[in-house]
Image (tube, rainbow, N blue to C red):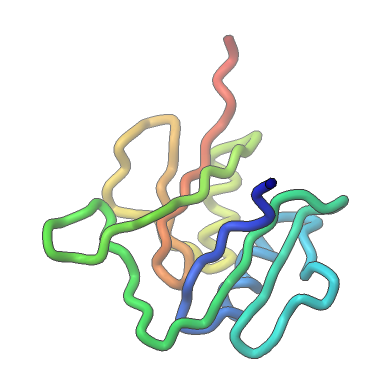
Amino acid sequence: MRLASATLDAPDARELADFYLRLLPGWRVWRGEEGPDWVHIRPPGGGTGLSFQTEPAYRPPTWPSEPGRPQMMIHLDLEVDDLERETARAVAEGARLAEFQPQDDVRVLLDPAGHPFCLYTETPQ
């Protein structure tokens, strides 16, 4: 058994997949795995990917969480070389910087469907 993908629900699977294709250089739709309500993308050379599924009743999670509001069930951590440059690029591609930033060396952003994701740089040891 191996993990093939994590799936994110969205009001429009294609729109959210297009955002992540712009954000993740070299990633492509995997072997024609796309339709009106489903898209699967993977990094160059294969490996664990991301899938997107249209969910008409989708409601974005609340960040940070609040009682009685939809909570995030999963979030993506993306390692970057330059935190400020990649944060600006993610915003230019359609992400929003979250108001609440719990750490100085991590940036929490929201994708176009409202899923939180984090950008961070590897800390030298």
